[in-house]
Amino acid sequence: MQLLGLDIGSSGIKVSLFDVNSGKEVASATSPQTELEIEAPQPGWAEQDPNTWWKHAVTATKEVLDTESANPEDIAGIGIAYQMHGLVLVDENHKVLRPSIIWCDGRAVEVGNKAFDALGEDYCLEHYLNSPGNFTASKLRWVKENEPEIYQQAHKAMLPGDFIAMKLTGEIKTSISGLSEGIFWDYSSQGIASKLLDHYDISDELLPEYDPNFAISGELTSQAAQELGLPAGIPVGYRAGDQPNNALSLNVLHPGEAAATAGTSGVIYGVTDEPLYDKQSRVNTFVHVNHNEQQSRYGVLLCINGTGILNSWLKNTLFDGQIDYQQMNELAAHVPIGAEGATILPFGNGPERVLKQKPIGSQFKNIDFNRHNRGHIVRAAQEGIAFSLNYGLQIMREMGLTIDTIRVGKGNMFLSKVFREAFTNTTGVSVEVYDSSGALGAAIGAGIGTGIFEDREKAFQGLTKSATLQPDPDLQKSYQDAYNRWIEALEQELNH
Image (cartoon, rainbow, N blue to C red):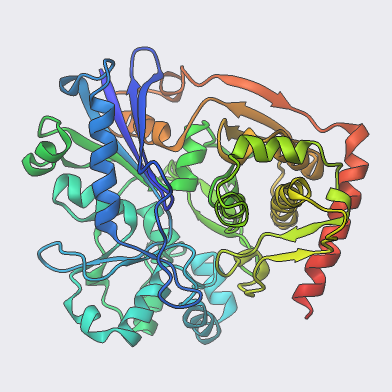
C-alpha cells in the first residue's frame, strides 16, 4: 500500500511516494527544475498563477509514477501541504479569477491594521489570537475594495491547498486550521470570524465548508485521474499549511515540541495546548493539525520571509549563477565567525511580521571593498538569517514557550554547516536532524486521515534521526558578539 503527498510551495512543487509497510519514502520528484517565478506587478506585491501550481503538480506526480517503486493501483490516499496565507478566487465554474495573492505579498497590511484598530486590540487577540494583519481575510477585503469586478464574480475564496484539493476532487472545502491561518476563525466561539467578516463587508458564503485536517474531503475525479495517471476514486485525506505540515512530518504534535525550516522563508514552530498570543502579533498562533474537541493544540509560528530566498538571490543575481550552493557554503566556511564585520539584514521579501510589518528591506552593512569577498557576503547572509530566527525565538520565549530542542528536516539552509553552526550556537538549542520533507509529511497525513494508520507510532515508524547538533561553548561567545552587532544594525534601521 502506498500514499501520495503533494507539497505546493512558492518555489516549486514536490511530490512524495510513501510506502506504508516500510514507513519510508520510495520515490520523489520536484517540478519545475528551476524555482517558480513570483510576479511583482507593483512594489510589495507577490503573485502566482494557481494553474501553474497544478501544472507542476501533474508533472511531478507523473515523474514519481514513472519510477519502478510506484504502482498507481496501490495508492490508497493523497495528502496536500501548501504555502500558507495565499488567496485564490474562483467563479462558479471553478475558473481562477486572478493570480493568487501569496504569503509574502504586502498590499493588505494597512487593511489589517485598520481592522485591528477598529475592532480593538483586546478583541482581536482574544478572538483571533492575532491582528488581522496581512492575512488572507485582509487580502480578500483588498480585492473587494480595489477590484470590485473580480470580487463580484467570486464564488469561493480559498487557500492554495484548497485549490489543489478542488482540482483533485472537484469539491471546494477547507479546514479549521486553514480558516485560522486566514484569520477566518474565532477561537472564542469556535466558529467563523463573523465580526471581522462583517467589518470587511464580506459574506461568509464565500468561505468553503470545513473539515478536520485529517479527514476524507473528496475523491479523485476521473478528469484529475486521467491528467495524473492514477485510478479515479482515491481519497484525499489530509491538507495543511506548509509549516503545520512540516511539524507533522517531524512528529511535532504535542506541547513542548518544536520544528524549524529554512526554505524560501524561515520558520520556528512551537506546539502548545494554550491559546497564547503576542500582543504585537510579531509571531502568530494558529490551530495545529491535530487540534480537536478532545485536545487543544495550537502552533505558534515565527516566520522570517527573507531566508532561503536571500541565499537564492545571492547565487542567481549577485553571483550570476557562477557558483552553486555547495560552493557558496564552502566559501562561507573559510570566513571567521562574524564575517569580519560584514552584516546583512535579510528582510527583503515583503513586510516582516516579526518587525511589526515595517518594510526596512534587506540591508548590507559595513562592507569593506578591500577586505570582503564572496565568502564574507555568504557568511554574513547565513549568519543574518540565523540571527533573525533567534530574534523571533526570544519573542516566543517571552510568550511562555519553552524551546530547548528543535527538529528539522535534512534540507534547505540546514544543509549548510555554517548556517547550522550559527543557528545552534546563537539560539542555544539542540537541533535534531531527520530525513523528512513536507511532501512526505503530506503523505503521512493522508494515511492518518484515511484511517490507514491506527496510531501515531505506526505513522512515524520510518522517521529516522540522522544527526543531533549541540551548542559548542567554545563558539557561543563569538556568535553572541556577532549577534549583538547584528542587533545594533537592526535597531538602527527600525529607529531610522
